[in-house]
Image 1 (cartoon, rainbow, N blue to C red):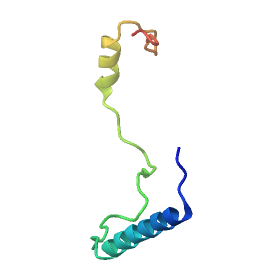
Image 2: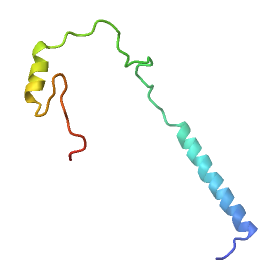
Image 3: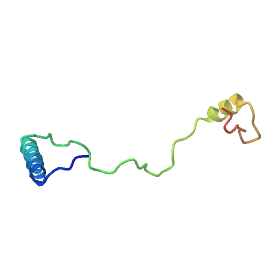
Length: 80
């Protein structure tokens, strides 16, 4: 591999600095729109009584389950 002499290094540094300065000047001209959005933290539920469950849901779930016990649905793990 050929070595770069000091004069060539200085030329490369000047060229790189010129490119960076030109890029910085171009970035100064860029106008960004303001970010519109909520700044509040969300995703928390309000604790309370909760919703009343559908009375027939449990019956339907147990009717559709192939393997069941008195109060439990017996399901397979990793059967795929």
